[in-house]
Amino acid sequence: LYGKSIGSCPTCYLAGRNLVRGVIVVSGLASGARVLFPTKKIWLADSLYFNNLGHLSSNKSPVQLIHGTADEVVPFSNSQDLHAVCKANHPLSPGWIERANHNGLEMQHSDEFLRIVRGFLSHLLATPPATPK
Figure 1 (cartoon, rainbow, N blue to C red):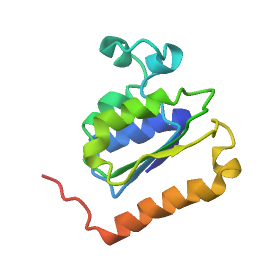
Figure 2: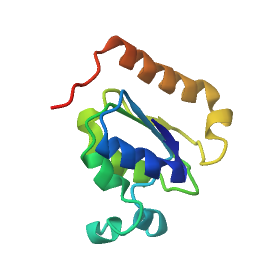
Figure 3: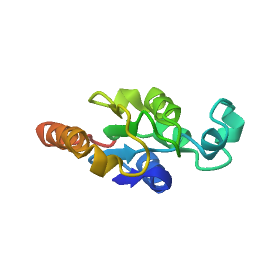
Figure 4: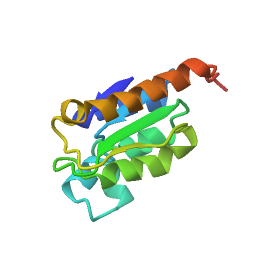
């Protein structure tokens, strides 16, 4: 599964309900509330809109997070919060790309972006798939 920005919402929703081979979340929202109010972390507000935190907390699939540290649309702290809830299934270091912003992340920082994606895909190919419990 792959999702970027608002597309991270259906990706995290599906990942929280299904065991898949791998999940890549780029510039993902922790929740709608944390995009609108990044300094307020209220779990009740998180659960109201686009609760990627809740969905990824029940995810059992390998996850790769990628986010630009200079993201002006979805604050970088959103991916840090997502990493906190899914790090047990985060086999590699998170892909924090220094000075990358929201739009153009893949093009302006293509070498680093592709290195992270290739590393994750190589990891998936080298490890057996998770089995449902």
